Image (cartoon, rainbow, N blue to C red; front, side, top):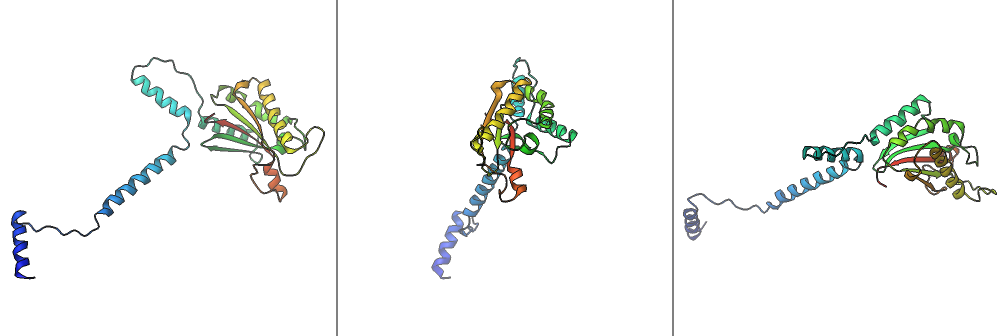
Length: 227
C-alpha cells in the first residue's frame, strides 16, 4: 500500500472514531430476499390452511367476537360440515355401504358419492329401496343443515337411446331430480336443493373398463360450503 493510501485510511479512521469501516461484500441483498421469501411462504401456507374453512365455525368465531363486544343476538344451533361428514360416515357404517357410498370433504363442501348401481336399476331413474333407506336416515341432518344441497347425476359413456331418455343427459338429470323429489317428500326444504345432470362429461375414472364405468355411474350429493 502506498504512503498516500495509508494517509487517506488514517484520516478516514479518525473521522469514524478510529474504528475501521467494514468493507461491503455486495451480498446484503440476500438478507432482504430471504426475508421476502419467508414472508411469501408464510402467506401461502396461511392460504392453504384456510382453503377448507368450515363456514359454520367461521360464523361461530364471528359470534364469539360479537358477544365479547356486547352483542345480545340470540344464538342459533348450527350443524358444521365436520359434523355432517361424521354423521354421513356413521350411517354408511351402520348400513355397511362403504363400497357403494364415498364421502369427501373439500373447499366446496361435503360430498356423498353414491353409486348409481346402488340407487337405480339399469337405464332407470326410479330410486331403489336401498337408497331410500339410506337417505331417509339423513333427512334430519339435511333439514338442520344451513347449507344448500346440490344433487348431481353422472353416467358412463355408454349411449342410451330410449323413448324416455334420448341421451345420458336426460338420464343423469332425471336421476338427480328423482333424489330431490324423494328428499322434498321427506321434508327437506325445496329451496335449499339443486338438481344438476352432467351426463358422462365428468368421469371419475376411465370408461374403458367395467369397474371404471361403474365408478362414473353415480349421484353426488354435496352440502355446499358456498352457494
